[in-house]
Amino acid sequence: MTITQENGSMTARLTGEIDHHTAAYLRHAIDASFVRIRPDRLILDFSGVTFMDSSGVGLALGRYRQTRAAGGTLVLTGLSDRDRRMMQLSGMQNKEGIEFR
Image (tube, rainbow, N blue to C red; front, side):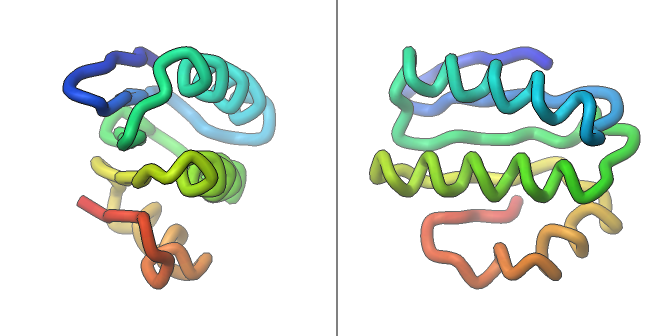
């Protein structure tokens, strides 16, 4: 994973597999950077993800709560069709302050 910031946005480019074991590391790294950077928009880029289970949905939901509490927006991008459906089935597409790209 790499984290970058630009123009009030923070982007976390996720790679590899997201499962129970890796999600904890990703949560910690994203949250620590979020607190330090304080972005208006958090972008989670899933284009480098090769596998994701429900832990990826939990990762996104937790970051959604974090960005909303700070008055920001969460953007999910680069999702495979399967992973996009998983996110949508969780009800995320109906939440204010979240964008799918």
